[in-house]
Length: 179
Image (tube, rainbow, N blue to C red; front, top):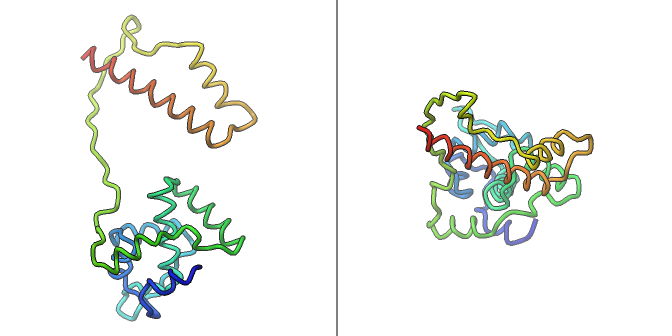
């Protein structure tokens, strides 16, 4: 961990969940969820049941936020990356200085957690004559590559998923036109 991180986080033994929420820039419910997903975050509890985070927990939470929100890792990917960094002796390599600086200037946004957008799905009747699903050789190749014994690396999977997403968007447009 760099000296800047040590100096930027307030010099305290324990931090309450509200303070950690302000430092990290996420809502308390996000912190509680991350506790359930990342075994390295283990806040102790006061007699009144208040979560008490140590400095190391705050640094780990900042690293998790960077991995999830800036580097766009999945929860599993972030968990693996943190595990690898701890094995290599670099637990908080990805902590962003911006989050700490913003907290110190009292300008941090508490609405940094992603918000789900509701989607309305209408039932569609598909008759064999008007089915929007079209089989193409390209789709067969994608399906074959997904089921092959040698798993593709993450960049190949990302490309395949992007292609599948575009195909699904095209199908959705076709379905909407039929309605």
